[in-house]
Image (cartoon, rainbow, N blue to C red; front, side, top):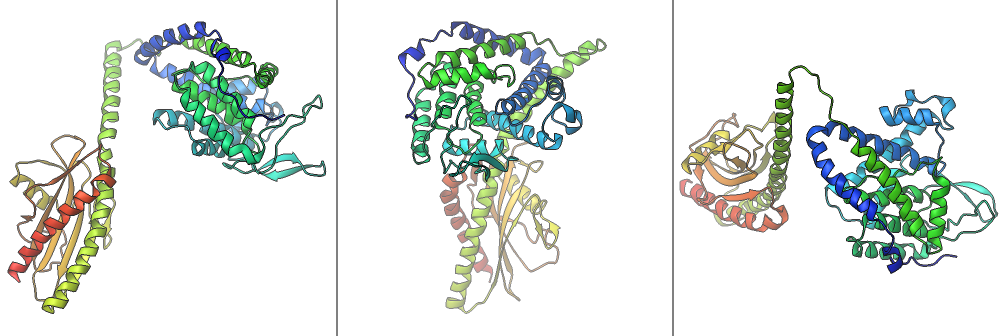
Amino acid sequence: MWKSIEPLSDEDRRIDLKDIDSLKDAWAERKAKLGETSEENLHKFSEKLARQWSIETGILERLYDIDRGITEILVEHGFIASYIDRSGTNQDPEQLVQILRDHSAAVQHIQDCVANSRPLTVGFIHELHSILTQHQPSVTGIDQFGNRVSFPLLRGRFKESPNNPTRENGTFHEYCPPIHVASEMDRLLHLYHEYTSENPILLSAWLHHRFEQIHPYQDGNGRVGRALANLVLVKASLFPVVIRGNDQRPEYIRALEEADAGNLPHLTRLFADIQKKTILQALSIGPDTKPTVAVVQDVADSIASRLRRKREEVEQRLRRVNIVARSLQQYTADHLRSVLIDTRSRLQRTANIDVGHQVLSGGPGQLHNEKPTKHWYHYQVSRTAQQANQRVNFDEDHYFVRARLSREGLPWLTYVVSFHHIGPELTGVMEITAFLEISYPSSDEESPKSEPLVCMEKPFTITFQDDAEKVKSALLDWVNESFAIALTQWGNVL
């Protein structure tokens, strides 16, 4: 009968995992060296392991069967339908490949979660379930009359009906009733977050078993549970545990049943033994093979490649400032539209002057009247930067917002807020400046109408670490002040 999940016990914590702990430390040291001499081979090893997990997790659930020869080919070369002999599987090759790619996408989802330090939440688990079952349209079950029928699969949603199986020996196993699933999942995640300092092998076995006790989804629970176990291991810089569907299924099922009875060591030890075997295989990874000719050049190229990758990683981080700038550009444009409407209304009411108004955003990929705006206002921005003894880096993205007031027979006011990188190299810092031009209309949008006049002596700066929402208010205050200066200058020449 179903019962609520239980926390880790003192007895669970006494499970002897010293052998895997010492091996884990040895592997950490070896892995660092492999990163220098065998990066490509280490990557290939990890890729093959991920493909193996993607295959075996479905065999465990009996979604399909694949003979060992085809499995080895797919692990070695990837999931391609033409590699699959129809006589070696009980599934259509194209459909099989779709399922395997879904499993592989789930592995990537786990890796992305770890890389981005994303916390484990119900939302993440729903995403994982949706990915794993993407090409599984239905699930087979028993209706109220005892008939075997097919139901649409609820992807990324907790079950709405009981999913209790009858085992081959006729016994009945009750999983968590649908009404209690949400609270049990909340309890599971609450306990998990309290256990982050526990031994990762023990924690992965505990999390996997308790998730299976809840069985929160209509189908796919085994695959999701094994993926969650591997999330714990990958976070601890260990390998995913691959349980071979045809060879280890009986032991795996027996270990889960023992855990149902309160005995977690068997499942924990199974995970530890598989992890140990995988680490020992990894310790045998040899150096990347290189041609014997031009060894010095190859070493130099390797060093250059490594430095280039590090530089690219740094540049990618620094270029996050562009994301901040684009958000602030949108906020600025929206704000200036409101300001121009108010300015036009005041001019009509107090001076009986009717003026046209326009706000335009420009930059990479943005057009105006089917013309690219990427290079607009480079001259003006450079001129204002020179006045401050600064250098603008136009090799990086440049954005602007232009606000314009116009009336026939009167000079136009063009007010521009520029978002640009500062310095000869990428620094992750952008400066926001404002200038105005007072001129009569021209058909050439890009040509300078007059020498640009700086509206604010003190520019606004943003960095790759900024949050656009948090600096928005200060920037719009700055825009208000600089536009007031521009409006005053324009009024002086009317």
